[in-house]
Image 1 (tube, rainbow, N blue to C red):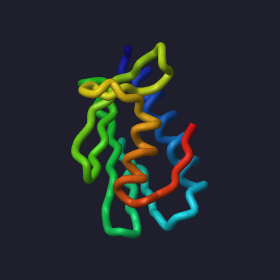
Image 2 (spheres, rainbow, N blue to C red):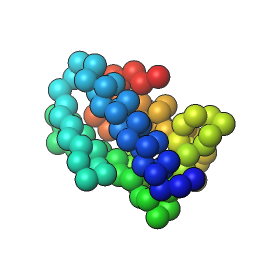
Image 3 (spheres, rainbow, N blue to C red):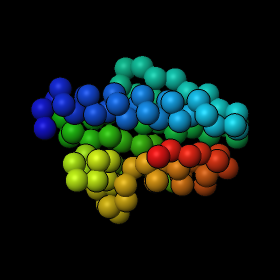
Length: 106
């Protein structure tokens, strides 16, 4: 995958995530810029999504730890490099665990 293709995938992922966050009923704030998307929850915790071009990975820093995801063309989603979990359902679960956010992201 070229760096351009990687950046397009991350941009699309961030765009989809932002659209889903706009539909969340609970109070949260998010900000995107410089290859990073930061989500601040009303329980004073934060999740940080960041692109890592040299590794062609999407990283997530959450209260549960740091997670690295590589693009899985067959699944059409990012896949955790350790557990093999897909990104979207993983993010939904992490938001529930971290901040009790009911989040639907398909």
